[in-house]
Length: 196
DNA sequence: AGCACGATTAACT
DNA sequence: GTTAATCGTGCTC
Image (cartoon, rainbow, N blue to C red):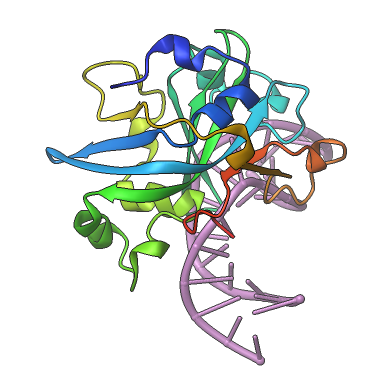
């Protein structure tokens, strides 16, 4: 079942954990491309200096200030797209970055989008999964709760708290403390599809 | 108008 | 472990 708006309207760290085990689905040319979410990170508000919303409301960050349950897709390093899910109440800018998937449906199509020798490499990283699922600027702002969107998340088997690993967020090179070290990255323990 | 840098990845040594 | 690729964004001049 497609997750509803209320699922996303929660504290970001709580949502980041709740999304583990859920299934991200992309409809591409009538086909389902999907995978279980196995790794996430929380980015929370203007005071979190790792969050893009630290710059306040701009054209780029506007989606994060909108409804929960929308996709925030941004471009970085001159070549990569990142997928986030907007969290918390409208007007509070926060989102969950989807960092890795365990591929489930449409692996053959994903391989066409992203040629790799083995499926383990298909979605093991935030820019890898957007490439495999063909997620780019066209999906920025899309409502994951709408019946008509080509991107959504389905409920799954919740991962119990003891099965969730936690640690600092990845790639925050110049972010000052204490934000750089906040343990706001979550993953499914012992799952081989988690990024490295 | 110009500049430094980035929520990364792949291909090096 | 190091580095190139490659361009939108936000900040300074």
